[in-house]
Length: 79
Image (cartoon, rainbow, N blue to C red; front, side):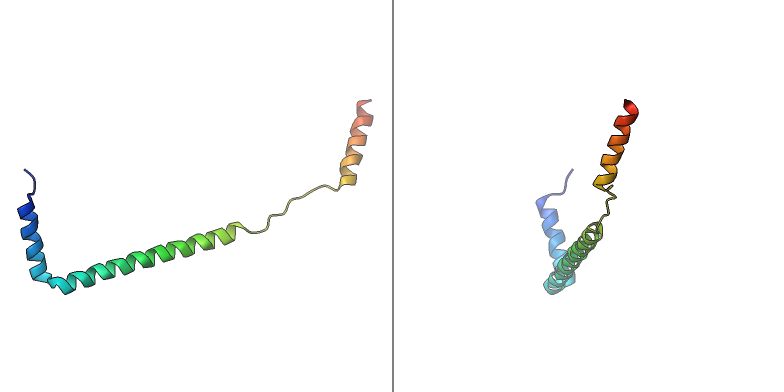
């Protein structure tokens, strides 16, 4: 047993009579504003996270002289 079209129609008419068309449209407008506010807040959080993750990273490189000196030492030890 499911809900028929007529039962849904009767419930819709009762809801409209109780709340009126103006209150329902105001309620739907408030819901839409809430969704927009939520999306805006999520977008601001994403941009804040992205700016924090793009902080400069330091890489410790050895100078070229040190690398070549180590290769020379390694080659002399291998001989």
